[in-house]
Amino acid sequence: MLAIQEELGWLPDWAIEFASAHLRVPKSEAYGAISSYPALRLSEPPTRLVRICLGSACRLAGATDLRRQLAEAEQVDCLFICALAPAAEVDGRLVGRATLESLGG
Amino acid sequence: VSRDGGETWDGGGATWRVPEEQRLLRNAGRVDPLQVPPGGYTALEKALLLGADKVWRLVRDAGLRGRGGAYFPVGAKWETARNTPADRKYLLVNAEEGEPGIYKDRHLMESDPHRFLEGIQIAALGIGATETVLFINGEAKLSQQRMLAALGGARAEGLCPVPVEVRLGGGGYVLGEETALINAIHGYRSEPLARPPFPAVSGLNAQPTVINNAETLANLPDIVRNGADWFRSVGTAETPGTKLVSLAGDVRQPGLYEVPLGTPLSDILNVWGGGVQGALKAVLAGGPSGSILPAALADTSLDVKPLQDLGGVLGAGGIVALNSSRCAVEMVRGLVAYNARESCGKCTPCREGTVRVLQLFDALVQGKAGASDVETLDYLSDILAYASLCGLGQMAPNPVRALLRHFGEEVREHLNGECRAQVCHERD
Image (cartoon, rainbow over all chains, first blue to last red; front, side, top):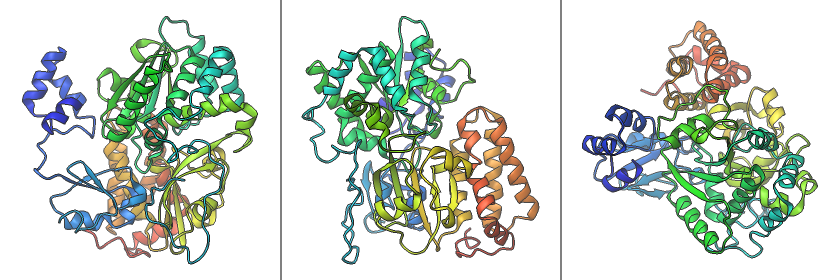
């Protein structure tokens, strides 16, 4: 599933159907497994995907305000660069000490 | 020294340096992670000469405990798997690291992958494992690249006697639970199973499986090289050795540090972290399953027992400092919200309980809660701790209980619609 997502950016219905047929499991089971992992996407991402970290360290550094100002951004639980809070990710590229400007908001 | 902080810190002329003792991070930033470092794999050679029994005894005598958060004695876990007769035995290495605020395993894999790989091979020898599975977070791209490159290098030089298979995960806090991790590798939902049987008896493909954290295994090369007494020379009698601490929040120099176990939390903030920005109000220790401690208890030492006595856990080593401009209730609400999102939904106490706790916290920060709600929180915490199937639910109430215990006054203020940090009540 990670490989499909790498290719398509998300997991559309037809890809899940195809993969479950390949694995010989019901579609429901494949969907069930996918929906339990935060990294797997069941909806199409926007053309430019901004994710803002709302972990403890980033909230302390003002990530909540950043999230409020950037309406199109998604939130993520942790980007694991807490020492560079607030952290964000733009199209898979990590941004440390993020500001409204550095995220192109 | 981890340079995660990036910019140098100007301490107003004061010299700031990290205390010298470094074990796990000794090579970090000093060796090329893509090359086998000088002197690398000599511990594996020594381990092969010693044989499986002696390696296991060495690890048991060193008193190494699992660094994933449970601090279970490694020697005892290995023993169970060793004593279970089977044709195939697995070593499952958990480098998923789904806990927010922790980035120690990534750092190990990215800066010194060969130490880690050597540790994996030594462990596989000590357990008698026939196969090894290395589980890495699917979003940790650099860790994957470095580990695959290191594996290729080690295989080419014949330094990889037990086969290692790399599997990628889809994230999730519940993967810290051993049985959920096994489910994830089998391709199912990441939900825990009832125990027993313990994975050490029947785990991956229903074979005996030892699950060790990445940091635990990174300790092994030095233990084999220098012996159990050397390992015990740092840390406490119960929990010897060092711990990688992910330090963040209101400190001047946040980052990843290697700290001897038993060090007071205040030392970690002041000596390693370069001091607190503003007046220290509280310390969040142990992430979403951990606790919030007031500044008065900052002298508590970084060890399993002292933190447990205060209702907390040492966990995977995440420490966040809060200064006086922060609201304790709001910070704990963040942890509660995370636990509610990450609950896998398999057992009812955790699925419903974590959401209900979050609703009560929402009421608290909006100033709509009453005194009976605080009682309900207390009651719910007990149910979660007693009735949940796995560690996620059992430990979810830890920060809530710590808040009620140490910050009761601040909670009561919130009932009256006051927030001394002026953070709450304005939010939508």
